Image 1 (cartoon, rainbow, N blue to C red):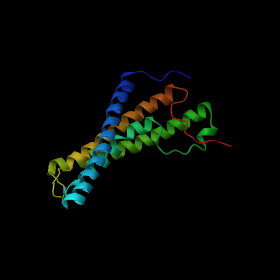
Image 2: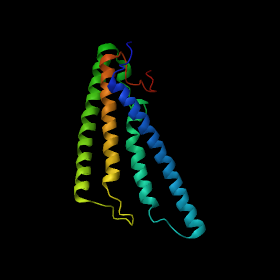
Image 3: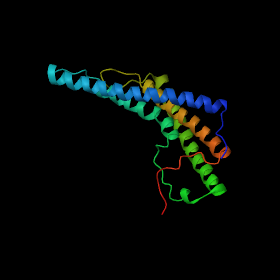
Image 4: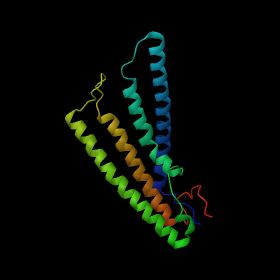
Length: 176
């Protein structure tokens, strides 16, 4: 098994992944604090922030999309390794290349549309229908950046699959 590539793309991806993971974690904490504050405010003061549910939704989007790349690297994506676990050598590598290629094509397609959505919202000045009138390009930008980070991670994954003996996490499945 060869050492994983240590090039500039892999180093940049690792740094971006760390920032994305920290931001995703901060979104979870922020969502928890916001919902807790809203519950306490309603319970003890019979008042509301009027925006807690909307902002919690945006934080959920940030947590999800910024967590994609770290989840891929950590092997946390749902996988079915029934056939992959039975393959060895070139056949396994060929399957891994095919899987990463499909994932990359899907991620690029989705992110292309996310950037288009962001551009349209920016150009039209679209805002939420809630009291806050949040410019929708803000949460859409988080989605598009999260998709871009996933694409970078998939490119690193492709390099690992091509260069290394085994790059994709084997998963927890067992073969009888």
